[in-house]
Image (cartoon, rainbow, N blue to C red):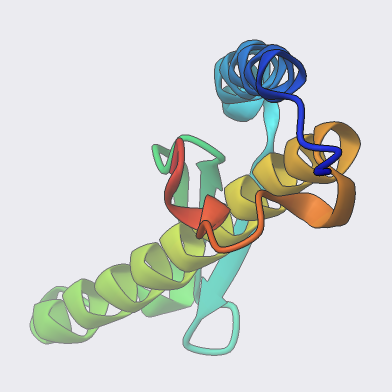
Amino acid sequence: MSDFNMADMFGKISNMQAKMKEVQDRLSEVIVEAEAGGGMVTVKANGKREIISILLDKDVIDPDDKEMIEDLVVAGVNKALEKAEEAAKQKMQEVYKDILPGGGIPGMDMSKLGL
């Protein structure tokens, strides 16, 4: 006889969905920071992968080298978004670990849910 309880599983899934929604709603409070060009460009993003701010060191602002600024901004934004995505994944993994033993349903890739 199996110990599998379908009602219990659906209850856990419903609870997990509610917790996932709560975490997703709070991802705007998760702030990450990334630098490019040795700190010449600093980008802050939140867990919802939104850019909060871009700071440029005064030494990087050279009107004759506009391309360098653009490249550094792109690099900084990409790094910040990578960090924001990783932070969001970690927060969502906390939900899985709290609700489902072993962090998920056997055979199911939980990392794709809600991210």
